[in-house]
Image (cartoon, rainbow, N blue to C red; front, side, top):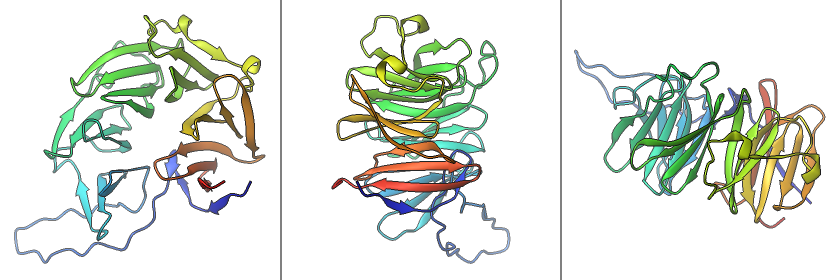
Length: 287
């Protein structure tokens, strides 16, 4: 099996985007103002068929795929906060789901250019401890949020919470849907539950996947991706895949851990991290 390697820097939990050439700005007259924001460092990248979006500390940057022209989406355009972290495109509602470092959430409606704020995690005083949002997964018009306190399901169309599963102190780092189960990766391993379970908010109903299913015990599960009908899982320094019954180890690194998996392109992209340095590995569809 051959892999194609790219070397990039890993920044704040996600892969750095390519540094683009400076935008050309129109001349200003007296009394006019223009934003000049740092945008070469990206935390998270997503795309639509026509656009690429990436998050920076101060803005979401939109890049047109045809001419590579940039556009800033900031508080001036209606965003509710600064400190953008995750930005994910949901085709079912043609919207960006944007999360912030303070656990705030925005829905950016691409067809209208409007912003809907969903502050229910940030403002909920009943949630103690870690409110960070570590991952987002979609199922049609629903979003699953992997949080420091558990898993939250959100109805994007109705802009409301469907349910919350509190994980008794386990930090949920990732979430994913594979076949007929909902998976969440915690700082102590992988859990799953049937998507049609009658009471998913009860954490005791979730099945822990451990050595009996081929998963290593006690390792954090930071990333999931479905590729070639297999569930790929990044657990510590190991990359595994699971077919619903058995687990196969694909690769182990002595000095790096799996940070990120994505199949937004044709192949599988694996982000490996050590401190602030990273490496991106690409598995092409032909292999």
